[in-house]
Length: 50
Image 1 (cartoon, one colour):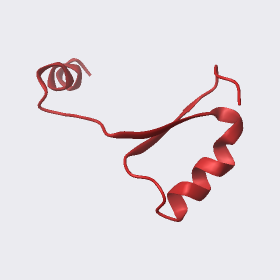
Image 2: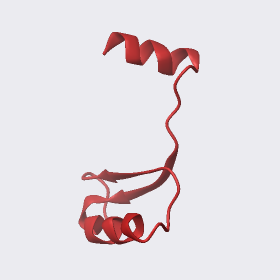
Image 3: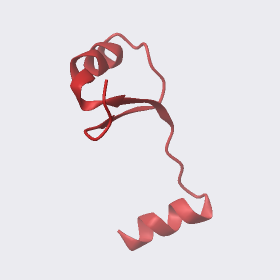
Image 4: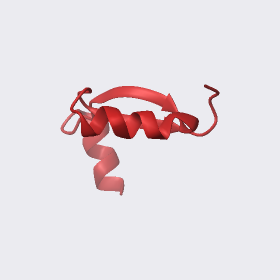
């Protein structure tokens, strides 16, 4: 884990986050991914409201 964090901190590894959505929209997130309508990762956050 420390090695991965080191890669992130030095820019050797980057994560493309395409969309951040509330957990209540998980079904919509799946639909977007299944239909190729997003680039990067879709992050679901349980602490934000729809």
